[in-house]
Length: 137
Image 1 (cartoon, rainbow, N blue to C red):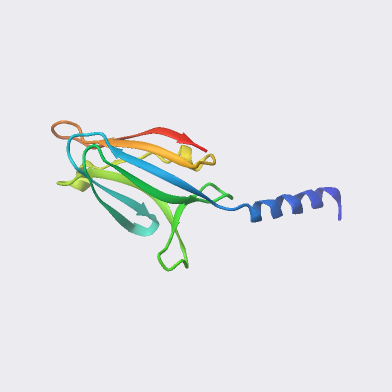
Image 2 (tube, one colour; image 1 turned 90 degrees about the vertical axis):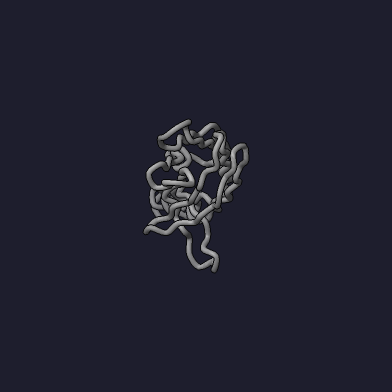
């Protein structure tokens, strides 16, 4: 085998055996009213996380693919990976019209072990604002 082909084979083998990692998303409601938060998967599937009271935190265990940094959870039957499109929070009333999203861009570009985010509804009307406050390995 030629040296270039050998290097390519070894690189591909190393990528194939790298384990996916657990990544914890810590989501805190820093506002004064409860929020409704959901994980949105591809193909219009969602998981309701339930109400997030002011001053409380959800810890969401995700997986991050070693190969491409994609975020996912395993389906309950373990047969399929459910790819995460987004995590969103909105007011309990008019959820669709007030939802804000957590920016997962950086989490998809680097290896992570945790991501910290906050969401809060503004006083009066308006969309929920979500911010990534920390990310790390």
